[in-house]
Length: 336
Image 1: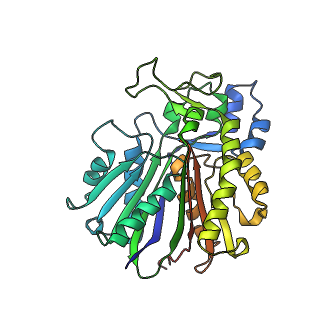
Image 2: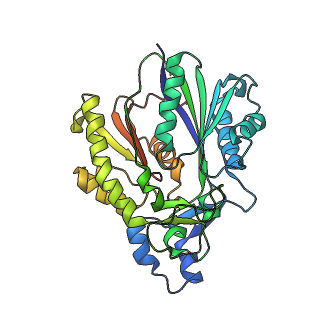
């Protein structure tokens, strides 16, 4: 039986960079120093008005192909994770397949998950490869949350950035991903939601958990999300370690969805993890939702931090509520 192996990753970040200094000049009453101390975010990349998730995903994939000499026709399946699709229909993955020149024998699907999406996508890729149906998968994540956010929304404009990733996943003889665990609690849907745009009538829509303070299309209850994360993720980590018969000390790095500094720091303390084992690298990109983990992995690969025999924990969590995690060994060797 073959297993999924995470290969090269390419990242695309929109050209426009929005800094906290710019926001401070625009909104003098905002305390950006205090906000940055809580979020850990100094700047974010923002998509152009005419730039959609598919555009960003295509650029990331083309970069992946060019940098790693990958033939688009070699892709057997395309996974596309986004909560900001181009259209209700057709499936955005179908549009990407055509634009990238992938084979018409290639499978292509969208799946709507946010902050847990990268880990879920890896599990889907692993299942497809284990089944013998495919050998090579292109996994793209792309989000343009900025399009939901009103310019005056202090709580979310300072957190969310846009971005995309493209990851090649190949069949390998030895497992590099194992111990997948998942969780879902839809009772938390009212803590991070875009109520408009679907087919629920106004009187049927899920109402925000607390008073809606900002005119954005998207609503977020930050304190409830932190409580959910600190309550559920330590249990998830223990379950993954127990299921994989791995001790806490055998994990080299705890690679968690890059939400905000405050949330990650509280989670680190709850898990009693040393700071150097839980990287927080979101200062210049912000929370890019489903793309935070591949961006983090690529940053660590570029710095030479990840070792080929180290066991790492990958964990995503957030909107839904949805969470997932697994153990991962990075076997990728970049071409010299």
